[in-house]
Length: 244
Length: 91
Image (cartoon, rainbow over all chains, first blue to last red; front, side, top):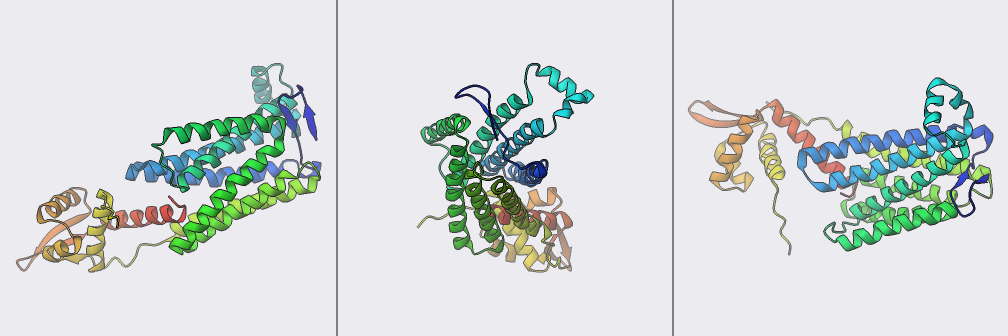
């Protein structure tokens, strides 16, 4: 369903079938939890090693977390208009007087588009080992993120097509990484991003069938679960024989 | 061929791993050979590790030995986790 507020302006989208209302938000909440774990650990690595790559990695997942949070807020605005009747809900609603659930949804989606694109772009930059010293490349890619966000507001499909391309590049880089180090955890990371890539392909076509949205969300959930596996495996590692 | 220099953390991890691989106790001369550092540099690192509570120096029957402590084991485990995290996530 597409709710248009302003011609060529922000649009409000709801692709979920009614029986799936809220389940997509739960899936995104799981994605947020996985992302927060990665943010926490990579930031801890940064504090210990002072190596900027860990800080950038946590920034990428922070951006993805903000993107998913915005989507949850946006979709819940449509799913649960009764929230505004609660005391907290009405307070928040008063702060945004004049905003209908559809305009909240439309604004939240712009924020979602921007942070998801920024997050995947940052991740792509990190794993491609592009030099952060090359400011011109960074500025050009930041401009690309802004343009992609802007056009995605008018044509949501462009957003998923862009995340698909970014994830394709990310997955390929992770595949190369796996081939190089032949590590079980690296294989799980590659599979996780491969699954997320497939989910984005499904998202491109959600306008044609609501069931595609359900499938895309479930595939996305599987991708984030796979992303959690290498993280768990690393932490399951017990200290070796302590000798004396 | 590019030769990558070891960072401070890698050097500490290499020292601790050398002690660990010898069962948690090593002779200073053996450590000097294993760590691939100059005598002065190794002394500097050992003083720092003693200060951080990762190792201790013991004299048994007139012979000096370097012993790894709990903090040293913890550091080595965390270092290995960071390394694995870094490799797995392509960092």
